[in-house]
Image 1 (cartoon, rainbow, N blue to C red):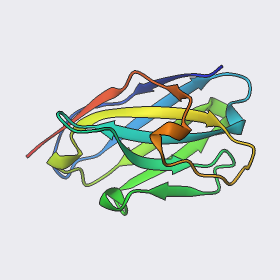
Image 2 (spheres, helix red, strand yellow; image 1 turned 180 degrees about the vertical axis):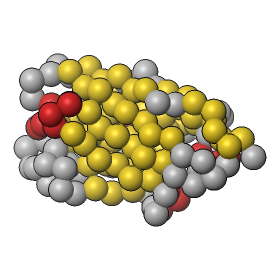
Image 3 (tube, rainbow, N blue to C red; image 1 turned 45 degrees about the vertical axis):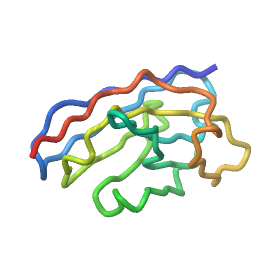
Length: 127
């Protein structure tokens, strides 16, 4: 069982930055592939970024490539999403998700692939 808790959301002006954190509990955190998703008002939840449990492989959706970076710190059981050059269209509730992975390099990009979810943190980007 893994519990994940997001933090770091807030209100920021367009062009600004935020760093989201996802703190996870569980002794086998290092064996979990992790991902970030977001859901804007009136829209479906969508994939944003993923990182393998080894941390060696990452992937971001095209709309955030070059602006967002996902990373993880095994010692702190934490995954981060560094968000730069934020745009109003990035406004959403951001969710962290976890799933155990047998392959250290495996990335998970679909909602259905994840077993554990946080409650979300609100990110609002003003124009």
